[in-house]
Image (cartoon, rainbow, N blue to C red; front, top):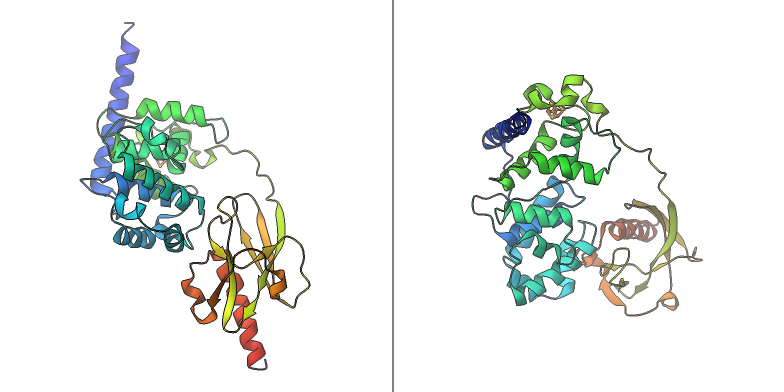
Length: 340
Ligand code: SF4
């Protein structure tokens, strides 16, 4: 009798993963990085790009990146600025810097062979290492992203507010099968993205509703529990529009910190005195930035400057914040020129 509960539990968990995998085989999303013969470089790239970014936003970047640099050696050989330009607009630019640094390490030393090895690389955290190990290497690993957190919190009615990191990992570990761990992880993500969605989960279409406690209680959207949100701090700065002939001053930002390594308009923390052209706001993860865009003179410049032709500024690989600022400055200029 002492054996009965572990045996029943095993049966339940096997049934759970079998149902989920059957559903995945029939309904999985067709995504460009999915393949029957997954390549570690491609899986790793997709997982890095998908951090904090939607599938829809990533698709075109992923295809372009992989076409230009189809393997780690090709990528390791290019200049940093080329890679940053290709990443422009995707945000969270430290991802690109870390990805490139790790690619150079791997071009020299080869790919890590397990999750622990991937964890040692710059920019590769717990989630990414597990995802690459499971999906690309076919090893059992516990893969927890935002979708998985939501599904698990509902399946097991987790009362601890997110992140509840340890509890969610322990529960996900308990339901992860020894075989097809990569498919299982992707099935959980797909379930979260298409069925167990944040606001209106489609429980009647869910392959695992028989084992879902939140469904049985009738309150799936009460999970995951959340702590009250803190207000996002506000910051302000000035971006300078400085012209010389047909050129506009761009500076490369320091490698560490906000938009590190990217080209942008010169920025100062203080409120500037030049003609005000407009204002841009942009929401970053930890704060909201309001940028005054002002016309400045070369006196305000500090450090290395690239004088970029104004007609080709859209090819400079500017991050979204500066693209918005440039659009405002050019519109204002056009108004002045047309006498508007
Ligand atoms: S039954 Fe509903 S709440 Fe439970 S996992 Fe499925 S979709 Fe999510």
